[in-house]
Image 1 (tube, one colour):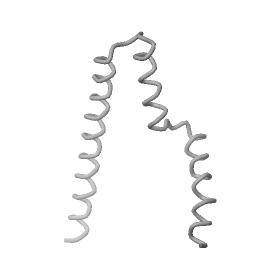
Image 2 (cartoon, rainbow, N blue to C red):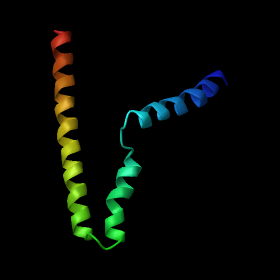
Image 3 (cartoon, rainbow, N blue to C red):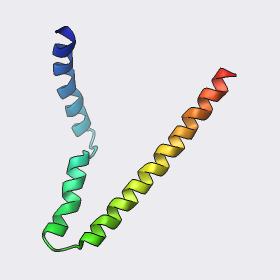
Image 4 (cartoon, rainbow, N blue to C red):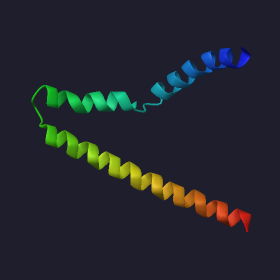
Length: 78
C-alpha cells in the first residue's frame, strides 16, 4: 500500500520535471509528425521516411550505448 501511494505521488512529479526540461514526449512527436499528412501538406511516404530515419537513429544510438556498457562491464570484471 505504501509503495503504491509513493509511486502515485512521485510519478506526476517526474512527469512535471520531464515537461519543464523541454524534452519531447513520444506521443507529442508522433502527433506533430502526423498532422501535416492529415492536413495533406505532406505525403504518407514523407512521414514513413521520417519515422524510418528516427528508428534507424535510435537503433544505432542504442547499439552504441549497449556496446559501451558491455565493454565497461567486461573491463570491470577482469
